[in-house]
Amino acid sequence: MKRWVSVLAIAGPLLAGGPIYAQTDLTATHPMLDAAAIGNADVVEYWLKRGVRVDLPDPDGRTALIFGAFNGSIEIVDLTLSLDALVNRQDKGGSSALIWAASQGHLEVVERLIEVEANVNLQNGQGQTSLMMAAAAGYYDIVQLLLDSGATANILDYTGRSALDWARDGRDNDIIRLLQKAERGG
Image (cartoon, rainbow, N blue to C red; front, side, top):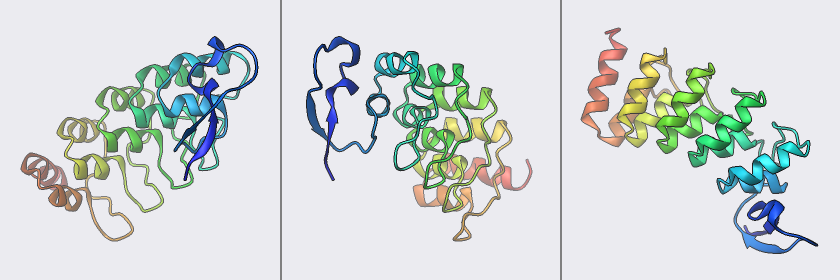
C-alpha cells in the first residue's frame, strides 16, 4: 500500500518552505523514520538534534535503529546507539535490530550490535532468532559470528525448527556443518 511521505525524509534541512510530498511504499509516519527507512543518516541526525526521541516507533514498532539495521546503515546504527537507543527493542513482529541485520546479511551492523550487547538469542514473534535468519539466508560469516558470540544453535522456533533446520532449507553445506558441530557442543 502506498502512502504519501514528506520529501523532508529525503532532503530534510535542505528544503525551505512548505512540505513537498512524494509517493513511496514506506510505512513510517515521521520524516526521521522515513529517512531511516531509506538509509539517510544526515536527515536522521537532523531530526534527532531537534529533539525527536531516538526510540520513536512507527505504527509497526520499528525505530530508526531497526530501520538502520535492516538497511545496513552503520551510520544510522552508530548514531542511534550513541543516543542510547534500546538495542533489544522489538518491532510488533518481535524482530530486533539484530534479527533484521542478520536476516539481511549486514555483517558490520551485526558486529556493532553484538558489541553493545544485543541479545543474540532473542526470538521474534515466530520464535526465530538472528542465527536462524542468517542460517536460512546463507550468511556464513554472520552465523559464525553469532555462534562465537554465544548464540544457541538448538533453540527451536514455534514450529519446532532449529537454526540447522533453517540452514538445510537454504542448502548451504558449510553452514549446515557449522551448525551440526555447534549443536553437538563442539
